Image (cartoon, rainbow, N blue to C red):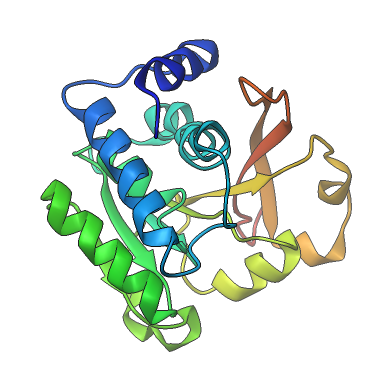
Length: 221
């Protein structure tokens, strides 16, 4: 099962603090994920509980320092292709003041997401059960943050969301590597500017991670 002591140790190593019932709720989420994963393919089958905690839940929570740093009085996040809720739903559990919109087109995953929202009685989550390109109203909303853990190619992702961010929206690119090479003159990232990056390692495996924060480049800059 999802071990509380191990989870707390991981949080401590990452320097992340959770308030209130967030720890218990995330551990319940983790247990429900394990149960549902026996019936539908949410994550890789037979993934050890410690690996689930580290590579899905703790990895998602590494965005909290970014949200705390760049989010002001209004904090809204769009998670594109959230799957089983990573990172968006985990962040919604951790921060009740964060309004999260999850985009996920696969209906079995949507059923799981709705189950977690009901189970944890989350009032700060909206699900769009469709592909991003069919979610026309998203361009009318002003998100503080946009992210996706399903990004295989940052340039393709930025092209996909190009009409959604406002001038102050922070796009958080999550990558399982620590190289900045693609942000030095890559034509696919033209029109965007990097404002910050964070390199770190996951607490148990030592796997490298990179968060790159970017905004749309203004025409006159």
